[in-house]
Image: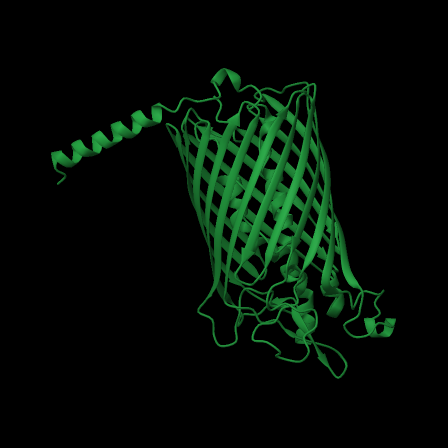
Length: 77
Length: 411
């Protein structure tokens, strides 16, 4: 059984964390992300193609991993 | 004779196997999970790709189809079917056996569930060939922060493989080895300015043989042999590998939007493992968008690595070390790759299709091995008969062309 005190403390901590996060204002405004949203800014425009090329490199080289996530880094929309 | 059978081999693990063992987990991580955009579901699309690798006497080709579809506004599912058809007469095969053909089929399914700014991912991949089976499970979570300028992702993949062996083209029921793989990934993507995105990736992996009997190892190609000096000539015996392998990799990449509908991208990766290999690679890529219907990409990539502690092109005598390998992927070498590609966006649309593209990409790799000698590939004449002294044969060089042609549809 979780006591009411624990719940209150947890809520207070969450409120503090959220309020501190909210102070970080996005320095690139949504209306400034036209270039960022351009497909040529994606680290992986076509996952099926990039996945295959990573496969070839993995086959021919001793190193592997840390190829990054699929998709872009935009955060638009 | 065992050694010769093994040779057919070399490629088997060199191309097919090489793929599943180290690539399978990475493939599913890349294809079915961990989208960097946590605040939106991935695009709904269908990709149909034909791939071809040709070089060093090896030709690998086949199709790959990827379908991704949303269910409602919070769930995205994907499926991938991939085939490698291998025809090989590589340097390894020429050393002690004849060419062979083989096929590997891989299927993947994935599910992404988006809740607010968090995306949870699950995936499953299976790969089958006549002497190697693999199953991989993966999960991940991705979260965006600070107005979607920052994306943080974690992933975990677990693989269970069964390594087999063929004798005279038939599976050897007495040779079935269990292997497990685990991979942990961390990815941080950051929008720094309205024209610059950066990404940091960290990955640690481990692979281990399970329930091995005395003298068994599962991490090597069961057909490949190490080479040692016997009576002034090369003799071959099956390789001996450690039972575990741990890897660590870190990469940093950035992409910058240029003022004239173009971007330039830089990648760097550093790698090390418990076998003594240290490697790094760097890549520069330029993308030009012509009037939104034609896209050109050119790139240049360099790679280099040191050798594994137990690698040697020619050991001085039999059983010279506890572990012995003559896998050119464990040898010291450097390589360069140039690539060029075009993406054409069709001006018309089909019913239910928002956008469609045709894509053709070509990469040319040149690998210069520093301690892997070509002692068998002289039009069928072994090195001693061609006038080369033992251990002084020409160093091997490999040139390969990689072609990707695919059509993509967004709906």
